[in-house]
Structure formats: C-alpha cells, structure tokens
Image 1 (cartoon, rainbow, N blue to C red):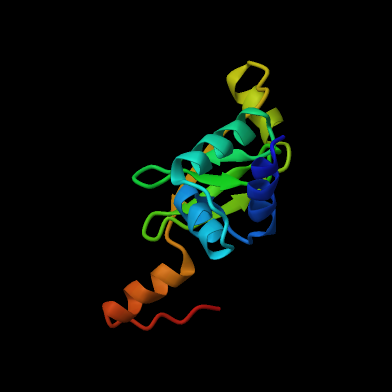
Image 2: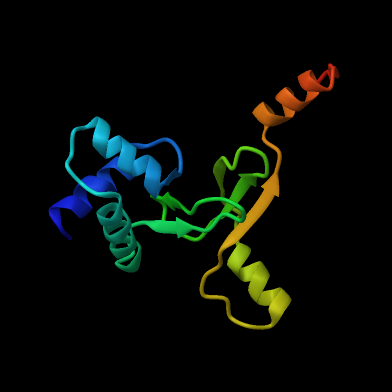
Length: 132
C-alpha cells in the first residue's frame, strides 16, 4: 500500500462516520496535505480494490467509504444521506435459504428518515410527537 493510501485509510479508520471522497479531500486540506481531488479518488478506489475499505453507493448522493469490509448492511437517511452500519446475524444464510443459492456476499442499503431529520420535519410541521 502506498504512503498516501495509508494516510487515507487512517483518516477513514479514525472517522466516526462514512465519508465521501470530497469530505476526505477537505480533511486532507485541513491537515495541510498537498493532494488533488483526483488523487483522492484514485487512491480510494485502489484501497477498495485491494479490500482495505468498502465503497457504498448511495442513490441520489455521493458514494461513501466504509472502514468495515465485513458483510453488513447500511441504513441511509433519505433526507440527509447519513449512513449507519447495520449487522444482521446470519443474513447470508437467510439469503441463501431464500434464493436457493449460496450467497458469498451482499450489499444492502435500506432507506429511512433519521431521528434528526424526523425531528426537524416535526418542528417544521408544528407537530410535537411524544416518543417513549
């Protein structure tokens, strides 16, 4: 792995969220790393190809990069595009049983509205819904 690859991988591993290439690029700029956006994309795609990180495609949004390469799904807020990891026990086995085929891996994105966006919508609409 290249020196730049190690730097980008470390930035992703230290983050508490899934970041776009543009966010990673801006983080590099904050850290005063001299790198172009094209180089960020190139190195990120190499890291994905080598299995160090995972690319998550977001409908109507930018791809994000995930430090976890193990099989899992993602909840994607349809408003703000925030991505959250979801681990479903024995999901490959369940998929294999449902399809009658041995499932090696899967990519699952589920859309929902996160609590922050839901709260903003409720306030905008003047609703105060009590949650237990």
